[in-house]
Length: 144
Image 1: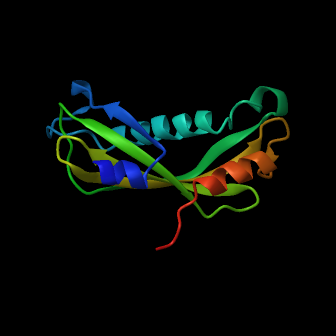
Image 2: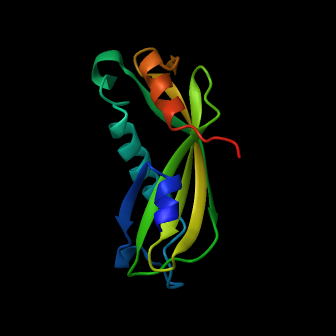
């Protein structure tokens, strides 16, 4: 677990709830998108991405999301969801999620989402601000 946290300094612990399991006795596939959303919003709060939204009307929207399920997760467990960033462009970036099971001591699920900056006042895409660009680059994945 220490290795996972070292390679995913931006992470959040999410306890698995009994009600998140389905008839097949494991966490339902759709629930992982809520886990990813929780990790995404935690990351956005850490870099103050949503702070200016009421004033500027500019904020993030998802254009795509994906998940790959490697191992089933069951209650009780706690997932550590790590976040990294890649593919930073003028108006978008990709967030990568890695869910690590404390009970299984391994990665159970990976996913990604393409995030586009959007001006809710004009209804059009918006450019990444300079402070956002700096924050995203600090958490960008490095190629091995």
